[in-house]
Image (cartoon, rainbow, N blue to C red; front, top):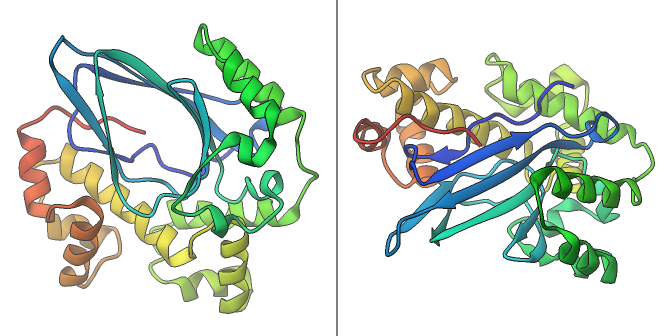
Length: 269
């Protein structure tokens, strides 16, 4: 199926002590699950490492240190600190697809992290307790858990997927009114659809995907003028791009590119 999130999202350079692996879901779950992922690290004694993430418009099911949680769409970047050795496993749902598991507007999860038991009760605690061993076993257990709770088909999930894919891939889309015209819906209808199914607005999704790509290009192509990158991604107002980028990443475009020059090539999330 066509991806509905990019492979970008980790900010800065590659830390040799960290590893990110991504795994495709089973075919029957692919309409709902974008991918599974495993972040692992092995750091020398006394050293603390960190990973900074600019989240996608997705809900994730995350196992961290034996605790299973449902993470709604994160509005801001966050940094995960670690030391010694360890790992975090997650399942990234396609934008809009978690609505059927939640049976409530996904906007209620935005910016929050809930214990999985709060949503699914004791079976979620049992799942967390069973999740050990090789990553193939983790994936198999999570996928069996999701299959047992598979929501009925919902045409709005497919519609949201098509809209999000357009926001991700079509560089001619720079404004939300272009989305409403293409898909033949009123602006308020589109806003309500995204609030119920995605948890953030279509404008937020469009901006986040463009900023993901801008950060990746600045990290990979150090000598390219940031204004050129901004224009390619549909930002024709340079001060607007600087404000958006700085608010999301925490550095101006120029400062971010300079930082990445000092580090290794970026990794993908």
